[in-house]
Image 1 (spheres, rainbow, N blue to C red):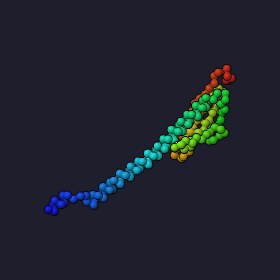
Image 2: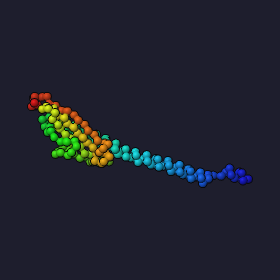
Image 3: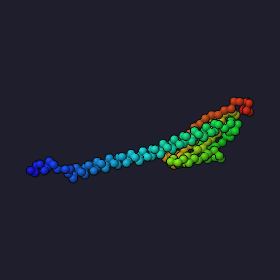
Image 4: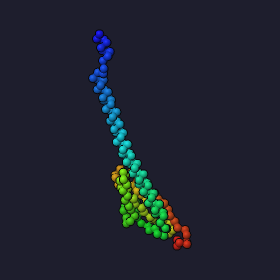
Amino acid sequence: MSHARNSQAGFTLVEALIAIVVLAFGLIAVSNLLVVATGSNGIANNATASSTLATRQLEQLKAVPFLNLVPGGSVTADVGAYFRNDVLPGVGTIHTRWQITVIDNDTYAITVRSEGLTKLARSIARSEFTTVRSCSSSAIGCP
């Protein structure tokens, strides 16, 4: 009679405690994964936004008539009117700077840099693009 009762017994206290410990370690691992994924998603949002805004600014500068381009600016410091801040919902503020450099009389280099303003986004999610513009039409007054 006692043999039948032992075969019907449930989990022992030790087995239940081991199951709880295994479950706790699994939940800790999953929660750590969620924290890392959230941070990576934020960085990816900043990288996409900075790339989009740098491209947009570069396209705007390429659309300016060559003779209206004014050399100046800096990609490392705010100079004159050669920078802007864009606030994007869900991303934050993206800071964009540009520099127009004279290569020779009829050629300019245009560099645009965009980055988020948070420490992590500034070091990881920075976008920088450079293009060269030249004027070769004497009809519009190019040298």
